[in-house]
Length: 339
Image (cartoon, rainbow, N blue to C red; front, side):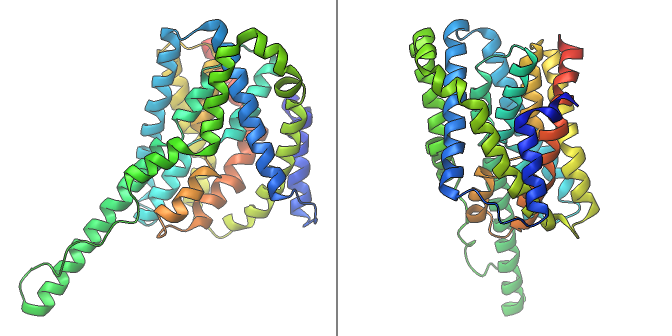
């Protein structure tokens, strides 16, 4: 309940209510984009300042390796399960969305840990950046494989109809997504570069930079996060209707899937003996779902998939549940098992 009286969370709930009653309250797109970039820059600086004190230790490497392992494992599990209930293209898109991460959920969790006085490593911001791309790459690989099989099957059918022999009607059609292109877009994406660049700057400047940037990355952070979560609440409420009429299996996945993913992360954190703060953030990353970066890529890379499925589920259900209930639950579990 303490999380529900946090101003940032209350602004998110207020945004949900305003969107539900169809208020004309709206945050201009340019301002929303600025707030997103501000939060990533401030988060990168905080992580860099922390890393300048702790250094790049073996524990940092272990945490980053765990993050990458989760970023590969979660979409594989999701795709294997979901393709039994929806088309393979939709399964790949949803798996990619839930295999990637939500920067806003992570930023909110960082703020929650700071409010609770729970220490965490600044390198976890780098873990978030590393977890962005693997799920997208896997989705593109799955989609390309499906297209090639469909093209081969179509070629066989054409050959059989023409001459009764199983001869190919032509080479497979060109795939929609290129792994190389996706990799390039992932590592040159402006938001990703800003996060990593700010982290490097924070590491270089250390305590001097922290003192100089405190009014920007420290004092303003809570207010900026509250304003951005207001916008996210509006968006969540307006995308919730997309979930209506969807398969109960998909709704169950959007609600229960993040819990399972967080449980896997908790088990991994326990085996690797991560701290409670790092373990909690790993759980948050595993439980979150992308609703900005991944949907933007999937619209071009997987046009066969329905955006209302992967975007509606992640923003309409998973995001608000994580923000209001998930984060405090994950932090409590991490403290109970890892402290």
